[in-house]
Length: 142
Image 1 (cartoon, rainbow, N blue to C red):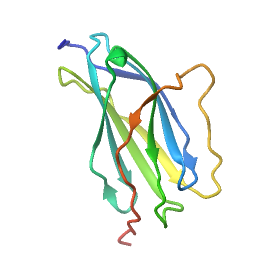
Image 2: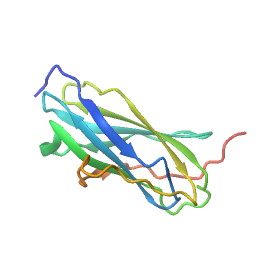
Image 3: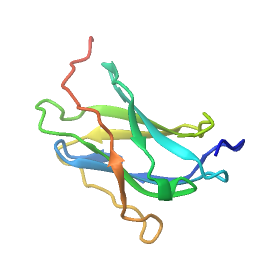
């Protein structure tokens, strides 16, 4: 199905801060009238260090018209990530090569962070896939 319409991210939720070592869940709702959403494209920018390689998450066949669930980033066991600032950019690409408008989500890794949770009933608690990016401690050049 190579439609003419562009995928749309309808709603999203992600905690703005988590403790280093925790898993960051990004809840998404998206739709594509043509029903041919293929990939969730994730780009992660680390303040002072630059952009990590892009991560693609293949959208399951039953979610290509209406997508609802979460993707996640494991912040791992790397030392030195305290107070790190990240910016995640998410796009959805369909089978015809159209892209959704980008969604930008900030994340601060803070050992004292209180994780936030999405509003009840708005998103499915369905795993859509991992963001395959391994965070590394990259001191800024300043």
